[in-house]
Length: 251
Length: 268
Image (tube, rainbow over the protein chains, first blue to last red):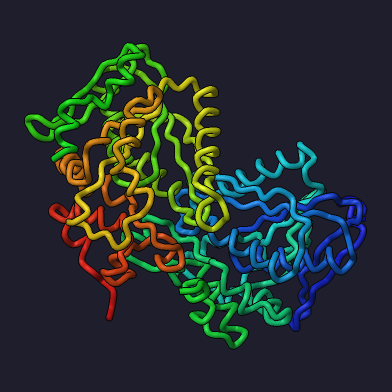
């Protein structure tokens, strides 16, 4: 029923050792899929695996990356641009739609502003019939035992604790919904893109003014998203600092 | 000296004043030398180029302040070009605008933004000028802009700053024909065309902006990977001989007021 409702022909499962999987819905009739590319770990591997799925089934579906610039965040569009370019290079995929970059208002990581703004942008893409479906890189939260000491864990996104479906509506899905950061990192390892792709990504979501005022580096290493990244890497026996974007770009 | 002489004989607001009914405010930094800002009396909208650097930030502040002091209601549309390979202009411009709004209790209009390819892509300077002209024309038409204000300044004496990394865009500021062309442009005001960074820092000090507005600005053009996503500058990440031109110029202008900003913090 659910598949019919969301107009999906099949789902490609990219499994990891925990038994969880990134589930990529697909339909050979879709002309274009929008993918939210933030430049973080989750959306980057989602972009990569979506391309691999399209290539595996020789589909003609275009990918439209959608990235958001938030004024008050240290993170910037440079990360998402680097990720898109690297996925192009690694896969040789050429069927890209026009890359969408939008400038959002100031948001707080606890508020709904970012999600609401993104929804509006995506609605616009659907209204103009530029895309048929949309993916975002939302993942499952780490187990509470692992995240209890993360900064502001009490304000985490609770709907990511126990997801029940990857589908958010008729036209959108969170293919990583059942995968936590440990699983995501394992995907990078399994597909051989840890050094090339993961190291380019930035998870840090700290505010620019806080970074500057405290003379911190970016990534800060202390915000909730940096803690989650650290947990994901270390749970796979990796060293967090080895995959810092500060080390990934040529000097 | 030549620049100061030019400033005494030319009005940077004059070309604009000749075609519109404007009020001109003069801000003196010596008995003889001044910068000028012209505002249309009819309340016509103005565009304001804002890169997030200290020059355009100060110009934006003075433009808003001048409009307020005249008791006019001219809307200001900030315009920011973001260079694709160095995506920081929007963020710093945003911080600058919010601070000016707070300092002056002023409200800017919609922030107009367009991207500009730069050294990461094979594109010529001519191509860039075409992109720039296209976008500016669109903004002129769409928002009925009577003119655009640009915070371009004069170069410091190269001998005092060091010319090892003297950028092409900065060199242009010394060419007489380029300056003349800008003076003739009736759609753009360049209040600081004859004034260098020491004049800019003078006004930051004069208007008590050194600890409020100035720290929110960015001059450095070092790359993202070097500067921790554009949160640090050459003084924190490079050895002195490698400082970019814009950091050298910033230090030359502001070191007298904020010496701690410019000590080299690179661990050897």
